[in-house]
Image (spheres, rainbow, N blue to C red):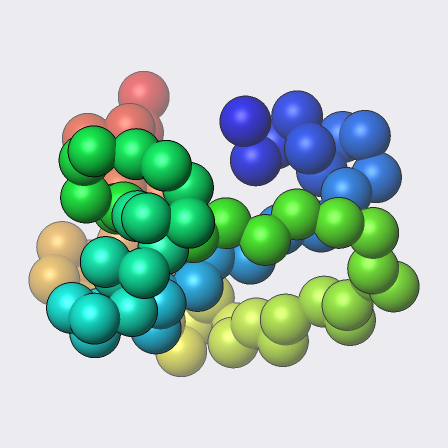
Length: 79
């Protein structure tokens, strides 16, 4: 569902504070007219694109000393 929303130009974010506090969770349940316990609050709408998250270089993250290989592909996926 989140990928489909993104594909249609929508942004989404999951909010947990409204369901972490029992009294707020109960108020949300009543406002929604539901009998179960709310599990998540999802905000969906239009927003300006956010900048890409910076990534560390692979060599900083992958420890090639374990098997002596410099190939960052996990061993199980190598052919």
